[in-house]
Image 1 (spheres, rainbow, N blue to C red):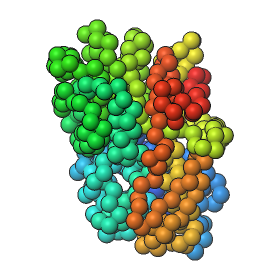
Image 2: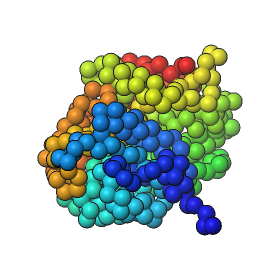
Image 3: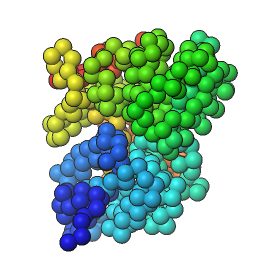
Length: 401
């Protein structure tokens, strides 16, 4: 008997995907390579699917039809992500949810099929182009707005920056955005190095950065590389601030540094804020439903004798994407071109944290530039920094079980 591939195996474990009277919601995520990213997309989508099904399913002209979650592993491979997009089309999916791997090629497939696709992690500017790819939307912070905020955050200190980016799509796209943002703010880059994805030892790169006179390290890379950067800084006895993109929040960073929690004090990361202007009540209500349905996500480390819990902040984005799709289906009455047109015409919902979610035909970014914040670590839990006005006004999110 032929062995099942990872995508088929995951689908089989979920049981019954795409068949009968159900409408598939397809996830293409890096299950085997970036587990936190994949789990956030899968779990956020699962909660939305379960809640939609509790109300009878998607509202079509022909009646209610239950949604069915299908999870395919793209293993961070653009070729596999492309194959997964074709699989979603063949299953007549309502929507494709992806981290962004291979997004431009995926867009060619989803455009032809009139299948809405939501990028839920990667922030590269070239991934979202409504004129070229009217089916591709982003519901995650874009690199351009995160790096713009990061450059503004450090510029007044007139730092000398060492830039580390990995050789993945995420790192390459982030490097382009960082280079532009730092140049605009006239921030001096004294060391610019590309590192291997999921590197184990970055001591040589950090030594080169130190010798170049760097007094800030900016790393835009996988969580493994963020952890390796902090480990190398610690080993070298170098007291230098480290700033990262949203991968600094990945539980893997804390798992790798479990024996040296003080090393986390050097790290700041930029991400989309968790709570909105309306306050924490909507997010807390969503989180309660999430944890009641799917359980608390334990990071795998303890603080003060208690489990550290990862809040479902990044799971908000797929949750909102599925619910926005459901709203557009109810308005259009069907899938395909009418559904896609309805999304481009401005279908709108209130998201998990109270923010409005919706798009126009000319604008496919779903997170506002005003919604970026910075976090630091207090032990193994992350909290908003107090040296940035927006971040300092945000509430702390409970992360101890």
